[in-house]
Image (cartoon, rainbow, N blue to C red):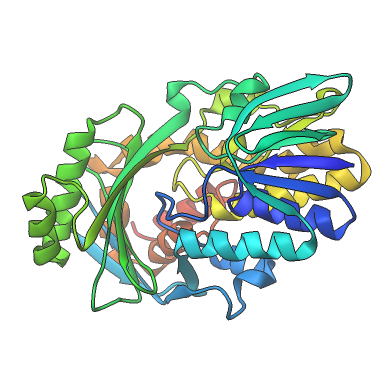
Length: 385
């Protein structure tokens, strides 16, 4: 079977690698060479445990041994994750994963897929470097996926978040991640250290807050960490400078109803979606690299046996968790407890109470699931009073 995969990020490249190893004829397309995608680049300890290639020495990464949580009012708490997690340069991670796919036998084409047409059981792809045919089409082309729209899967504005930030070259790379919650919107701002620069960013619900306001909130934080970089950014009116690179992007944050109606595969029309293109991103934290790679693994397994099983497989593996995250998101960011925002109280109580501190630490680090979060949190809160 010949498979065309559009998008050579973690999802598409991993799928290309897995399918090629099992004898599929794989065409892997991306519109550009590996690039520094607008993303924090965080990879959870769960992903490091499950995918061996992420742990090898070929992947430049910054291991994280400290996590600082900051409330909107400025309360802060530093915790040590149960297991170290990693921050990757997305350009370097993408390049390594593309190389794995090619080594396994996939054909990589740096080309823009301009048109797709399904007829008589086959796909015709018109690209910037010529025409190609395939028996099966996979959309792995990110949050704004063109393939998703072409196969008729619709996301609304409520199904997205908006992120922006700056990559800042720095002589000092810390091994700490900062997460600061917002006072008047969902989401948070972050400091993610990479092996050769710092990634500052902020994310909130799509159209929930004007970009100018998000920029100002993030710049105010950067001023506390790197005043020289903040001055350089302000002098350039927020644009890219000699030592900083501005980025902005949308990311999936699916609504509960969208999760309930989501189809990521149609065997009769020979297509599937994985990674961000399918919306497989944690709506509460924005973490998507694990789900990108895992969804590729699941689709590869389904395609070896019965591709129609893919929807049932991803729902059983992680769908309930992501749906639950969507249910909890508004309550987590807008809910109140004891007269203040829940995020404010969580940081405040966590400073005093080990149980809550461990829950919050594990939630942010990706070790705590959502389906069993409430019972654990209730047990911890009950011992405070």
